[in-house]
Each structure stands twice: as C-alpha cells, then as structure tokens.
Picture 1 (tube, rainbow, N blue to C red):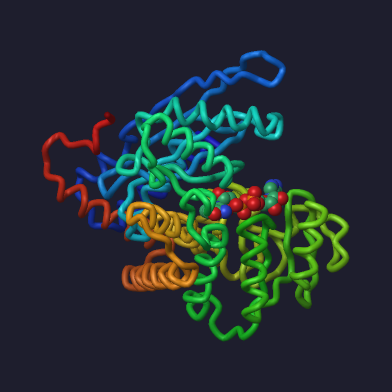
Picture 2 (cartoon, helix red, strand yellow):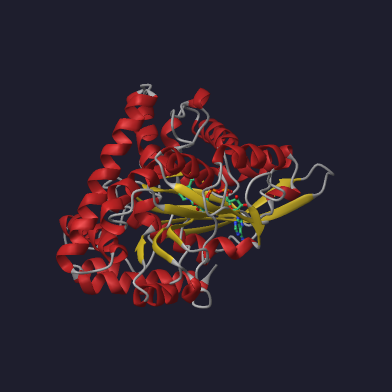
Length: 421
Ligand code: NAD
C-alpha cells in the first residue's frame, strides 16, 4: 500500500463528488486529514537492547463525532497507508450513520518477530506516545490487522494509568472482562451476511441456492462461510495464503473449519480438490467474496473473474482500475464501506455501553446490528437505482451527503475539527 491506494481512494472520492450534491467546503475539507501524528516508540527488548519503532495516528475528519478506526501492527504501515485507511473510515462511519468520524493508527513492525512481553511493551509505549490525541470524545481506536483483544486490554490499561482514571470508552474491541461487548468477534461476518441477504434479490435474482467463493479463511471469511452454508448457499471454493480448495457441489464447511483450526492452514484438507492459492478468485461462481487483502483484484486479473457479483468483505480488495473492467463485464460490486461495516457498528455499541456504564446482551447487539445494516443497505440500493450509479458510488454519495450536512452545519468560519488538547 501506498501511494496507489491513496490514489485509488481519491479517484473514488472524485467519482462520488460528481454524483453527489456537495458544497465546495466539503470537497476542500475532505482533501486533507485534520491531524497526522508520527511518533517514535523506544522498546526495551528481551535481550536488553533498545529498539525504536515508528508509529502513526491520523484523525482524518471529526465533524460528525470523535474519530474511529483501528490500530494495525504490520511491517507495511506508513503515513500514506494510515492516512488512506483513516479516509475510508470517515466514509464507513458516515455510511452507517454512526456518530463518529474517521481515524486510523499503526506501528511499522512484524509482530511475529516479537515476544509477548515485547509486544506488550510496544502496545503500551504506542499508547503513551499517542495519548494526547486519543480519548472517548476525541479519537477511539480499535483492533485491526495483528492487534486483538489482548492488545486492546493493554492499551486501555495504559491509557487509564496515564489519565489516572478508568476510561473504558477510549477504545473498543476490549476483552469482555474490561468492558468489551458480546458479539464483537462475529460482527463483521454477521454484518456482511445481512448485506448479502438484503441485496440477494437485486444481484442474484432467480437463483435459489447461489454459489460462493471466499478468498481469506480467517475471522471474517470462515464465519461468513458458515452463515452462507447454513442459509442454503453452496460455498464451492475457499482460499487462504497457502491454497484454494474447491468442490463444485459445495464444500463441507464444518470439516474445512475444523481442519483450518487444527492445522492453521487449508492445505491437505480432507475435502475438496486442492488448487493454486489464487484460483479462488477465478472459479465460476455467483458471488465472489474477497475477505483477505487489499488489492487482490486488479487490472491484470479482473478480466478472469467469472462471478455475477463481488461482496467486498476485505478493505479495498478491488483496485480503481479493476472497478472499470468489472463494470464493463457487468459484474456488480457491493463496496467494503458497507459490506464490512458490521465491525465498526458493534464498536459503536461498545462505546455506548461503556459510556452508559451498562452491559448489553448478545441479543440486543444482534438485533441492533441487523436493524442498522438493513436500513443503510436498503437506502444505498435505492439510491443506486434512482440515480443510475454503481453501488460503490451510491455508498460514497450517501456518506458524503451526511458529511456535507454536518460540515455545512458547522458554519463557514475557520473551524477545522476539534483541536488537540
Ligand atoms: P484474518 O487475519 O483473520 O484472516 C485473513 C485471511 O486471509 C487468512 O485466512 C489468511 O490466510 C488469508 N490470506 C492472507 N494472504 C492471502 C493471500 N495472498 N491469498 C489468499 N488468502 C490470503 O483477517 P480478518 O479479520 O478475517 O480480516 C480480513 C479482511 O477483512 C481484512 O481486509 C480486514 O481489513 C477486513 N475487515 C475485517 C474486520 C474484522 O472485524 N475482522 C472488519 C472490517 C474489515
């Protein structure tokens, strides 16, 4: 990632600007992040040496509420990557009408090279370094690639120490014991499933038992495979970073998940035929569901896609160049900022729960998630039909119209988000 991804994001923004009723103020305000912080994090390693890591936190826009977005620990993390992801988060929270803006953070590190104790010191050091720019009313981090509940637990504890007060709403995705919420770990797949069900008649009309291929068999992809299988779909191919496994009659998802859980890989699975890793993208299928990486479908492989519709569960799995080629081929794309928004929606519930000093039940979480996903999916589908625009553009237009209403309501003075303390 990066510069390409940032360029892709800008192209989609320009497309949406042409289709939306936007003020010039909004266009100008959305061109740059509000704040962008780069920090150095010195960490004492287990062997006694000191190693310094680069960390970032970007608050792209907070007109509609505190910024919201994950923290990524990955070697590719850079200012450009974090900025792009913060930009997307601004649209994702607006699409779902959550009272948040967009933010993102990360540390350039390969977490697999660190011991658990080193990782904890890094997470605590990162929290201390960005403590001035996060807070329940300012910017609320969450887990992302290679950060999990445990990391959120360390970060929440470190922030409470710095503030000398309990502040569970400073971040979401915490362990249940520290104010986390039931249903967070299945929120992305649950949300995607609601979007798919809601759009099925529109994008796959007349097919009783649609087929699906899923790239990425991790948290989001594997759980979604089970939901589709239980709903009568045939999941005919799934892939991970090693291989694709394929069965035109439908894979036994329980067996595949058990094998993946036990061995950590789809290789040597007792069911299905084993194919090359990237074959999952090009099998003939009704719905292709990329749930792994950014940029998986690009100009060089877009013409090989043989699906009727793509549901983007991963963030940014289709490049802007590929969008055009898929459109020419008549393949509909249901965009990431809608399809995978279940995660941030349940993060909002967690933030509300913490601020209320309450405990939400799993039943409440599931019911309210379904309501949100169905409402926004229906609106976007109607907008796409009314204005004769692709679903992706409709999702961006919907977000931009909410953003522009908020930006215009702040007046025309020099306001530019909330100032850092
Ligand atoms: P994960 O790490 O649990 O799973 C990722 C999967 O992708 C693994 O099965 C891995 O083997 C596979 N993979 C990696 N490289 C691959 C390659 N080159 N080809 C095929 N498969 C490959 O991650 P996750 O939490 O399931 O997230 C997946 C995607 O969904 C990411 O883009 C993430 O940003 C997005 N997303 C996740 C959430 C969430 O709550 N989990 C929320 C929003 C968006």
